Amino acid sequence: MTELVAGLSIGLAAGITPGPLMTLIVTATLRRGFGAGWRTAVAPLLTDVPIVALAVAAISALPEAGVRGLGIGGGLVVMAFGLWELSHVVNAVPEDGDVGGTSADVWRGVAVNALSPHPWIFWATAGGPLLVDAWSEAPGGAVAFLLGFYVALVGSKVALAGVVGAGRRRLPEHWRRRLVVIGGLLLIAGGSVLVWRAW
Image (cartoon, rainbow, N blue to C red; front, top):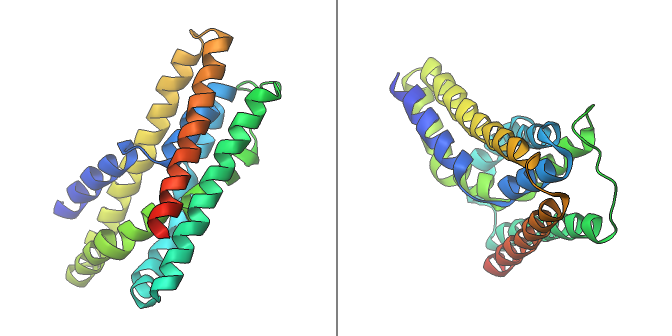
């Protein structure tokens, strides 16, 4: 029970913490509706299995240059998605609306999450030791921790997409475009900070 509560609380904190994935969720929802937002929000479910395994096993053994390279690469990808968002506003790309699904939203979220240093650092420094300790006491506790963590993490991001999607319909088109521009600029700024810190 303790592991489940720990997973829920840490997952919720991680889910509502501003970062590249959250910004991408907001801009995707503003441009194309709730469907695009929730598809982006599920990215951690696809990326984090290898992240958890590799971070726990390998990040501590990586040379400093390898960790730096990971941070720089992740920052550049985040900046690229910011530029992508801005180019769609400048070029007045037609909105897809909230109908149907597109795997592009999922894969953009996957790329940002997999190449962002945040999940790697979390699992290498805090999440990994918690998971290993829980597993050593009882495998069920480790499973409860992971379940609580991802329910809260992904659930909070999907809820954010829902709130933005509901508000999107009340916003005039020019305000939606302005907010997407702000989101794109935040992605570029966030990516620049990641590159600078890694450098």
